[in-house]
Amino acid sequence: MNKNITNIGRLTISVLLVIGLIYIVGLEKIISTISKFNIFFIPIVFFLMFVTLALSGFNLKLLFNAKSQIKNKEFFKDFCSSWATGFIVPGKIGEFYLGYLLRKKLSIASSSAIILLDKLITLLIISILGILSLILFLEQEIAILMSGFLLLLWIIGLLALFLPTWRQLILTKIIPKKYAQSFTGFFDTLKYFLKFEKKRIFLNFLLTLVKIALQGYTFVIIFEGLGVQSQLFEIILITSAVTILSFIPITSGGIGLKEGAFAFLALKIGLPIDAAVSNTLISTVINYIIVGLLAIIFLDRNIKNKLK
Image (cartoon, rainbow, N blue to C red; front, side, top):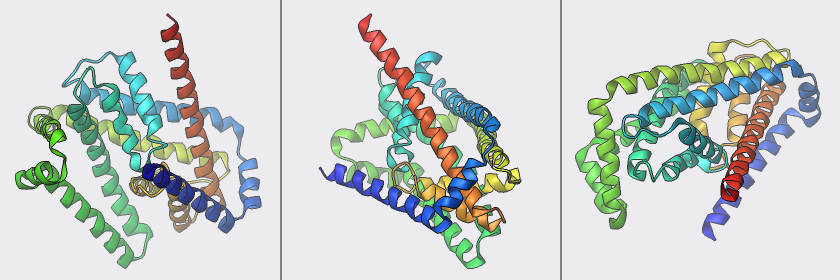
């Protein structure tokens, strides 16, 4: 019951943020801007998003291969399911659902550790880019405050993961005893990768840079479709800052929060706010169309498998 109330609350916040953003910019202005979008760019945007999704899956599979040789078809099916879940569950934690889906191939603790490692690599890159965007686009005092808070979160998180005393505290005081043993396997997996799989971590880092660049380029293409010229590096900085904000679990899948932050930062670099809002709405709609397509594909396959 409490969980349902929380979910309804997050959905309400998302709806209110989107309505507020549309009200500030003007519904007629947004509709007018979107109506001018060149449909020639739609298949390009779909293609870029699918490539980015495939690259994300391949990047994660690269890490999983160190602990378990899962068939590509099975892995990517489960990866897409967890990716789609991440658009619904707050703070992107829905993507950890992959660990549950692969539980017959690898323990949930080990899978969760690998997924977290992939997330940490992504967070490291976007944190650096996000801090740079704050310094360039916001007032100095606000940029220093927000950057300092982000660095503090990193310090606390790394201490909790890698400092033995903090780790022991988590295992004995925070995590219920019946789950403590599983989390021991979680920490062991992280230690294994840091000690023996540095090459895989480095390759993941490089592919993550490519993925972030592709994500930024997708927004540049959408701006092109709206008749607005934008710079790739500036858009990458903005999307990095927005991605960090999307991890704040106060909305459903970051909806409303991401759109508002993107529009605000885009305005800071001189892009029209109506085009920025239209850009995020178009990308969000296309993302959810992809989520829907994946759901239909996998639902159809599951039904066929049961009928066999």
